[in-house]
Image (cartoon, rainbow, N blue to C red; front, side, top):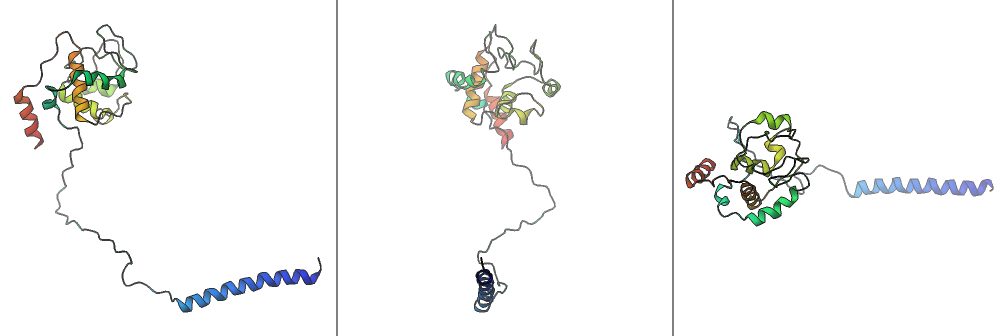
Length: 192
């Protein structure tokens, strides 16, 4: 390649650069850059006055289901329970698997099934698996018992939880009594 050809190529790149710079300067003159008086797309922000008091958190827990238990569908509960069969057995002569056997679980003491190694969090919780405790646990196990070994997202629909609890209630030689109207009324009054 001779020197003249190389010079022509370099001159072309130089000229292209000069044209780009000159075009930028001309654009600045034609469209001057200045601060806007207001945003082109205004964003409204509502200021909340600080009253100095902490706001009460919104209840993110499960909906009460005591009123739903009387009309709950055990057959639908059996269908919901199929999600649980990988870790639990439901028969009276069933064995513990990854999770404890669930025969006669309603009103049983938490963390007390023979032959199953419960998490320390569940054992330390105490109490019984009454209807309200089962409702809260089935809604979101990891939120109900911090440190539980159970890896289950939970049942979000109140009807699914009511059906499942009705099915668990039926898994006993003598099923636990359904909640009384006074208990249902007391639960509903506690929510309002």
